[in-house]
Image (cartoon, rainbow, N blue to C red; front, side):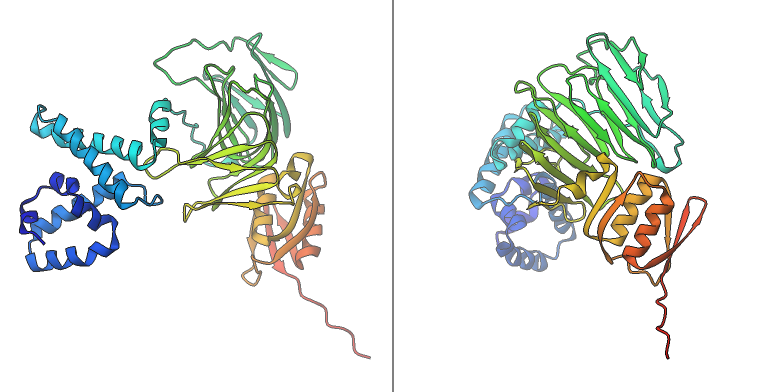
Length: 414
């Protein structure tokens, strides 16, 4: 290994194709590790660590680059850096990193990053809600800041863009016209649904949304420009009004679902380990966010398929899902389970009835449940059905449900 590297700066290291290969290619690692050991130079080791961090920052770990792509990326970075020679030295490194990121996005990801950059607009952020289980009523927050409590367990809201009104359970709210300001993100109204409540929403374009307990949706009073955007946390079922000119986007923390006109269910609770998207009709394109914040190549979902994004491994998989009712039954007032873990079943019941399950340590949370729960029944009736399915006993104490293992009776001896 050439000793010239010992005098290299961090910037020079990340422009060197041999060093980049060392970082990205395991075959080169042995050679560089031996070189660092022989050099015994703490200052050089520090620069190597910094350069490695920068390279990994600019390269999404889930995307594998070929050797040719690596060379092309870093050649373009070098070309961009040459263009910056007239800038002051102290700012050059920052400019270099900016162009490095651009080069990586455009070349390393086949131009898809270009779509991200060109389409980036100020992103809407959902209002922070500390604990939806502690809210007494569902709440509508208008883009103007006005707040309205929804007094029903199952409210209905309708947006009418023609007269700039929102109808809540047949009561009109007017003066919703938004002033167009190109310097600000599109204003949004927000629906916050606590545990124990549900809401249906008719958007300005005719799209219908069912919001499950513990969910949060941001939506505009009208859709402008060439797209339709909403923001979701929790679970919702969408029947999207067809509009070939304006795709419909559901923005979630870690991904985006894009449709033209279709029916699908998204479950994206922040407390869950997975984000699930199930398609009933039509076709949707799912884009997962990378570590750098741009959207990766679309994954197409067909009817009766489910996309699952694992929040721990960041792995997106698609599988056939013939049992659609187990995902959308809640919109019709029932839960249907097919070999679902007891813990998962209890989580759904907790949200729907706003209760808290407390387990006896002897209870197996992985016990599989198959059956149907009628959510029109009282909580006590639902728990009675569950106790038969899972062989458990329960006690109700306020909003706490204490779950204990059912003791089987010994047969009587003659």
